[in-house]
Length: 189
Image (cartoon, rainbow, N blue to C red; front, side, top):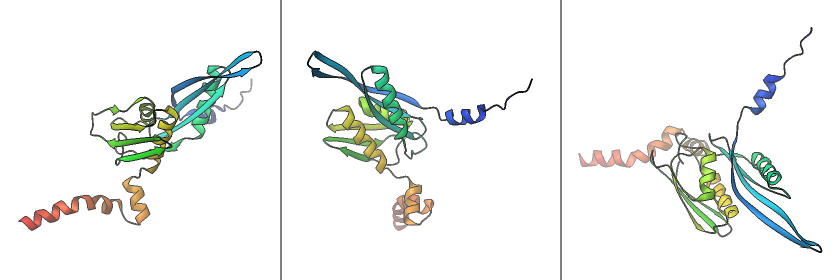
């Protein structure tokens, strides 16, 4: 009995990045036609690997499960990588905007947790952020809040990215923050 080669290795590699998903909103929409109303559903989903990658998508269909499936597929296609400090918080404070939606996100010390409202909380949980303080100002529409959050996160830069952009070493970038305190100590002595 001859055994066929096992293709499980390739399949396991494709499924290795396991993504978590969070349903943020479901909206029932209706279309009035001659015989009455036709109902459809719109779903908003956030997907992430909880290690620095996150994406969101929306899907519309006649049934809820199909709308969620479409939204999840779109979210997986639109994933972006966000640099995190120590894998738990943001590198610096950020502001994000989309339409009338404005969000403010701030770094937080260890143990703070995720202090954020509904749709923003879903993004941070799927991203893998453990400590952050965030506030939504303006639009409370979940679509605009998520887009504003993603806009802000896309603007975040790590010390490595800044050093690369300036053509310097990471140590030079980080040392600049400590330099004034050392200079003032030597002046006082």
